[in-house]
Image (tube, rainbow, N blue to C red; front, top):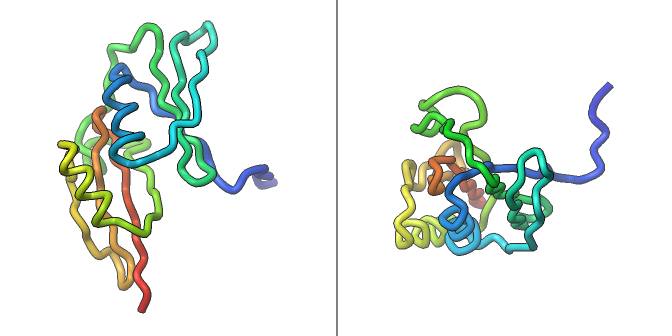
Amino acid sequence: MAIKTTKDSIDLGIVTSNGPAMFAFYRDVLGLEHTGDMPMPVTVGGTMHRFACGTTVVKIVVPAKPSANRPAPGGLAGGTGYRYWTVSVANLDEIVAIAKAAGAKVPISRTTVRPGVDIAMIEDPDGNWVELLETRAG
């Protein structure tokens, strides 16, 4: 039996000890709409900041007591597990320029991965990679 989804997208949770920088990156650099905040349950404590990305919700979770553990740096080659997520966009060059102007790392600039499809990878303040994918006609 397969999953029977009730929404056409997934929600993504990113746990951070770097709340202000992550909030600014997702709101000001990527331009995601901040849709609200909510307190986290007692087991974690802290705050969840919610951002809209189409019908996906990107949840930036700032625990009351951050973990000392950090993910492996280095994007795709840095380790296993969740290493990046993808947003399909119509303005790849504009977003990359905004990211560079804001001082964000761009480990992969516009690159053609197959005919008609270009990507770029931008690194958030915690080292998570966000892939921006743009398709071209013809």
